[in-house]
Image (tube, rainbow, N blue to C red; front, side, top):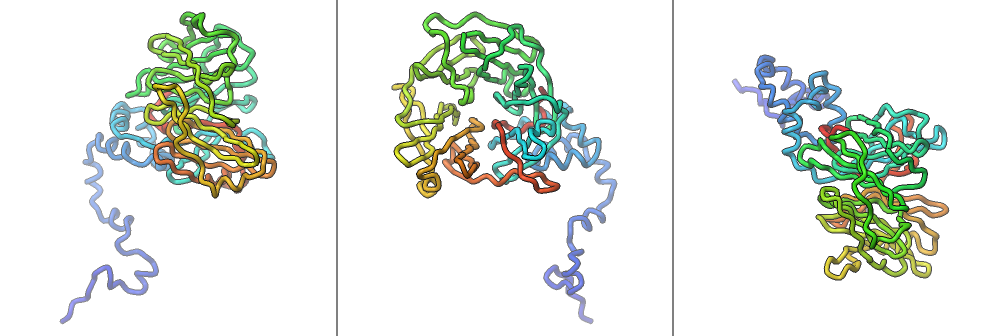
Length: 390
């Protein structure tokens, strides 16, 4: 008697159409449930800590036990062992119907999957926020009405309001943020700087603001700070952009030392911002000459303190903006940039990988339920980390 061939390639028409053979649910259902009961607790942390960040929104909803892993010491230790290469973007968004959407936590963009996520955070509806800085998995927000600072982790939807500053400042300030314990994401400092030289430092471990000395007399006041450029951080040093004269102010948070460097800008540059890639200070700017417009990337040469062009947007992309009055806004400065290129008729978003020198278009940010398009007001890059606590 011939035996039936039960190989996967010889399935019946019914089995092929239903897809019930050799599927994951069927295999799992046949496994002894006692195996899962005997699985060591630490293995849960090891496996889940190595899942892609994009699955984080799903595995937290599996059960209470998995949801509580975020606060466990074991999960934090295993998660920190896994190297995360690509930052995400956190954006404050709004639409024409409901206005600013800060109450819903804005939107998260994963450039690897080119996908938007819409978490919800308990942020007061009456407040209007700007993204000011980021460090690791944390983002610094500023309430433009009351001038109070907030620190949030958009991934775990956690928000903390910082204590009031000792100095009441009504004018605009430049803000930088640095991790003091990079391996644990437990400690951070926030630094704000005003045009009159006033500044304060918030220490998360002390939960208080303090002022450490004053700017050197060689730095002339008032400062013409460039608020369109984000402050960048390399190790424990923050980099602020200033004008008149053009250059950079640095502040070493660990040593409390301010320095000034006069660095002339490239010719024909209009909108520009600082960025960081591999420990190098970069400049991203809009180059406009005659009717041509192009986004260019420069690297700061340490020996000469001059900007050297290292890349620019492909010509075929630049042709789209030929003869148009274009404004550029940059979100993110940690190896990955999101650029907003606006004209009278268009507003396009593109990402640029500083290491790989890759340009990618960003899909529209739409609400998942009704598909309504949302407009991006401001944003910044951050490294998604479920163990980073404000």
